[in-house]
Length: 229
Image 1 (cartoon, helix red, strand yellow):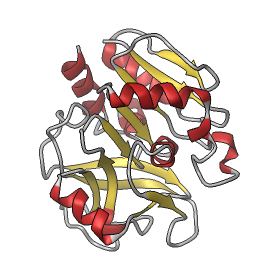
Image 2 (image 1 turned 60 degrees about the horizontal axis):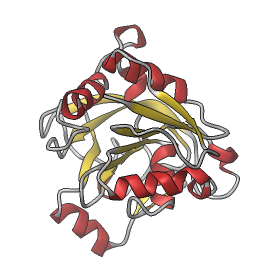
Image 3 (image 1 turned 180 degrees about the vertical axis):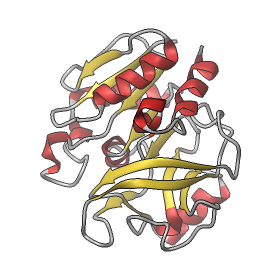
């Protein structure tokens, strides 16, 4: 399996993602600079977290116009899996690869803590290491993680099983208190209709090794290797 990590000015989780992929694959992922208009053929494209371009416009809006995104959009439309985490999720919505938008957190504050996620779709390359209804503990670290869409789109996401993760309590209950940012319907991660693009706000790469305090994120990367090798 070959994978790459897209690096924008302001990315700060690119190395974390590099390590998680290296540990899962047993080889180095390619680090691709945002200004490159092409890169080698890979089985997986990942867009890491951070503050691309300082998030000086809307989060992810400037990164969505980077030269590399044209190639990512083209490959995604051909079926290449794309994983966007945190700022990467914002980039994927701004580029049109995923529907909806990420807005300022409801409490207008930066949130950095562990949260619980309920797995809603385990039938994808990204989530096949988990079970439907399973509960994970994964860190979040964002200021603009409040997922918004109109009711029609939300209903469409529900009916097409495009919601991959929701914020929950430790028992899997979808409560208001468990929602760290005000995301509608407790949405923490969504898929495109073709199910080869996943965007999620929590950081599985930050909890993919025992030395980091847990391994709930590890199955995402080992599952991707199994699915794509």
